[in-house]
Length: 328
Image: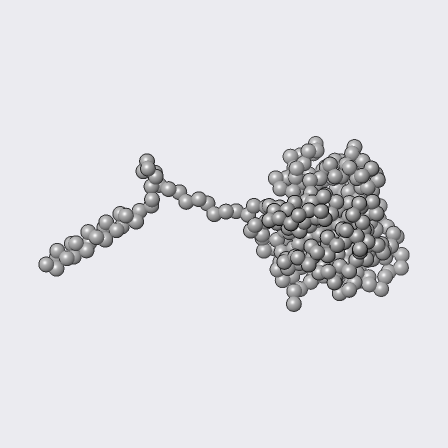
């Protein structure tokens, strides 16, 4: 009797094992489960003035599965198609940055259509999407996020710039999220239709967008520096209350040099040493903590959820200045 029971139990286990085999289609082929979803960039975020809020807006880039850290380069006043820009471009490419930000003056001398590809695409086409110039295939995903400078506005309506780039929102000012950082690109030029003072339509958009940010870090960047010890000096119309609105750092250009300042408890940087002729410092502001104009260079910033590390290197790869922000 025990042998019969053991035999029946074995038969039941065998049948269960057979039924647990991988499911098949009607033809007997095994069913292959779908792959797990990968990170797919999609547009979302803070509506621009005049837009209606929706689950998918058009002015902010965010990844559905964002990385835990990001490495990005900052370059300004660079669009000269000269040896200095070539050296700075090589420096940046050696970092294998995730994205590149610019602090304006992308296309000297006058923002014209016939110079824009040689001034930008020749050196950075592999970060630009869609890219329609003559220097290469371009990128599969846009990783180049510029801001307008005064030289970009010298051609009527800054039209070559607006035609060359495909950016979130209205192309002039916009925000996007990449990893742990929410970026806010501003148009600080007086030609901006939505204004450039702290009571403007653009400023109100920024205030609301910063208030709605859920990212660990918020970076604001533009061309005209609110504070500068350089030849052009400070741009008072851009002295918005960035810290009070929620910014962790502010980046600008216009003066062709590097400077780090501390204003309202947050760092302000000038990175305008990308290729245009270098400027002198005048009288250093009380807020100034580091100045450099001996050579061209660029900034490298590395961020994760708890820290953000800023570095400035000259084009020879020499570290000139660095500082770190930490979340409390």
